[in-house]
Length: 313
Length: 313
Image (cartoon, rainbow over all chains, first blue to last red; front, side, top):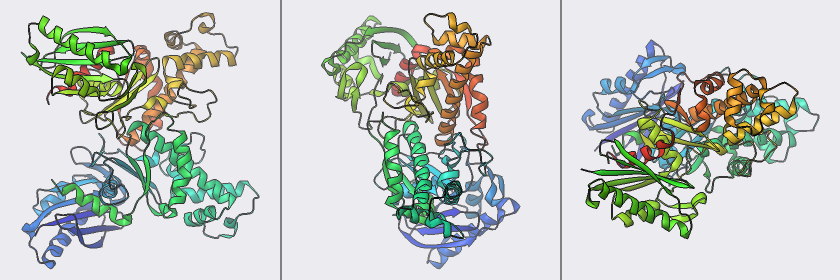
């Protein structure tokens, strides 16, 4: 029996999955992310956890064949992560760190958003396509690209970083990143709420949203679905900016499909309908356009994508 | 001795180059592009020309080892070009057509802009980088991407088609493509002249450009270099829109470098300076940014890129 592991390192938890060589997920679990000491404990914890789960499952360390890992930071072509802000790491070679602890040659590491894209391409909303671009609409906006079945990493590890692409050059409010007009300011859960509040403040139109105390992205999307005009305006802006970003991706990268995940994507087909028309308008010259799909793996996209990097190698 | 050929099919001429296996160009020439009959004559002419040049150079057909070809149209992953408007082709498999005529297995074909990008990456302004994005600023705006030394073709053969990416959503005039606000409307030679005429018409500012009868892009750029305010405004708009497009490419594809070619790039470092500041501003989040370079191969980029596809295979 061979053991393969997919690891998805996040700011608060590390998600892990144990897989067999055919890509079947046998168990999944999570560990708290112990930041500090340049991430040393994180790799210690992952290695210890993988070893103990292998033994618990009736295996031995020599049966561990590969571990793939997604990590929140850009990975340079030589494997170096210069900065991983959320997990307190600087100038670390994550694959090398884990490889040494497990005495295992086959350890791969990629940026978490790119790794999630690989997961969705392999077993999720992008199944059947060889090239996809994943938009993850959560607290922020993440993105990742898979080209011909492989992660597009980029020359500086930042390919797919669509969240801080400027979509509105007239924006006056600052994004978290310091710039103004980033996609994340409109298409994240936070951004959608911000936009809805701006629309509310700028008009007298009656709206379901006026009574809400702690407005959430779900409130806005539910109200938009129900025909609320204020919510509809905010949701339309999100759809329009996503469509623009997609049109740029299509002209530059030309994927088979866009896959949309993250909390906001719970709005389902309604969300895709907000995008379709403007995307078609902005890709008029393109004889063939990309398909729009919803992600299906949720939080498991990371561990699936991670293990995919080491399966079939 | 082995013979390799690079072929660059254009709307009026077909450029050809004869290379040896080490990538040295030994001779280059051109044929008129005979459109009609779905491109049949074009492939006949190319095959005949390659055969006769081989014999003239003291070789025999069996010494022809590979031919690469760039063609003005999108090439699908199966090798099909559905439409090549400028050369009157529809639903053609260009590599297969030439392969049959030469009885040669190794014939490759790619979109002309992508092939030129490969040429610049290999022997031109992008030498030393593994991933580049080429902007060709001529009558129109073309683009092509090379990732890890190989052409990025895209799922529908349109990767790199940056010219018709929308950069100005407020534009009221239509682009040739039917859309409004495409990069080509500002960053092509035609677009730069259009923009300069708009600025001239909208102000009373004295300008060197007011005396010109047939205003050219070179006139505008020369005047801008000389400090002419009207020309400077038009040139600044071109630089800004190019910077925006580059910022999107950096967030999505993350190349090592941008290479700028085409007639407009004769403006040299002055052109790059128009872009630098805004590109840096729009890529604030990116720890490492792409380099800016000028193309160096001119019209030969196509034949170099074409032959590169079949060398080292």
